[in-house]
Length: 390
Image 1 (tube, one colour):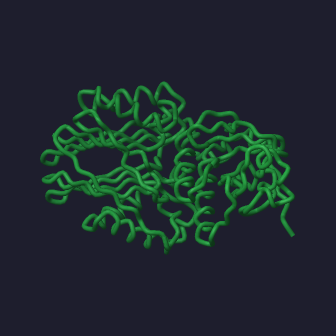
Image 2 (tube, rainbow, N blue to C red; image 1 turned 90 degrees about the horizontal axis):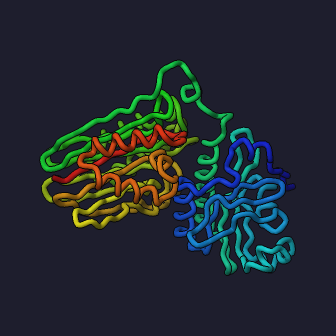
Image 3 (cartoon, rainbow, N blue to C red; image 1 turned 90 degrees about the vertical axis):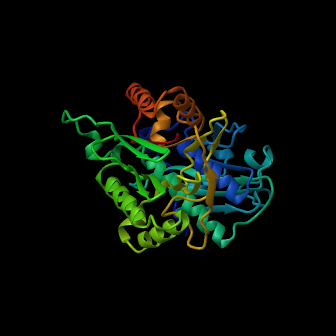
């Protein structure tokens, strides 16, 4: 018998996501899901008893609000697990609903999103105009994407605000800047914790002519997330002799055998830079917030289709990346809290790159970013790493 789960309108109101603007932290989930499952639409919805508000959707789409009775999500939120509809036109539950009859959607898969207390507040959905079915491996991967979207929504729940972020003891979070000079490569970082302990971490090591640099963003805030981030960075540092993908495989295996890490995950960027040749090998785990700014004025985003560390199916292969840098190039990697100091969308990364180009030095850029953070509502840790090739 199907367990009946109703949306909790009070919980939705508590999260404050209804009718809110797009945010990259959700958009990168739907962007990756759309690519991985090759569907027309991947969306994150906020769901109440009356309406479905589409929080994240592909560029050019405009779902906005859908009456609950016209949607698939009205049924998805009644289930404890994924609802899959291979062909809505052939399913009497949905054939007459507007999403099928008027908009031509045939395939649907929906993951119900719950708060930590079990309240149903949203869905992650795949939609396509052609009938299809998920394979067992696809379904497993989709559930992992759903857990990612669920974790992001839970970050907005004031009921889970960590004590160190909420406490007012007269101690303000302090921005920390660090620097490293290695031959023709300079590194600088900025860390502004949301509370007293940050779930973001960055680090680097110089190993002869190589520099290994990492930025990790652990889901959550406070001491638990900060402790996991510290251990994750330490584990990668211990494996700095390995190529980035090999290091990630080793750390992933280490984390899978530690029960503490089964309820959390981390997005990260991990790179190995050869300071003589300028070759850069990297692995991006669901992060997607690293920008290479060329001296000639062009730029490229260093990203991949990898899921965050802790959400990747065991049989999936890590996608490695390679590029090269030369005199005058810059690489900047940020945590998603930095985007909140702009407009919270992926376009914020472009604006961050423009601000970095205009600044004479990373320190000047960090000063500007710190001011922006102080002037905007930024409810997350902010970390930035800048690599300069001289």
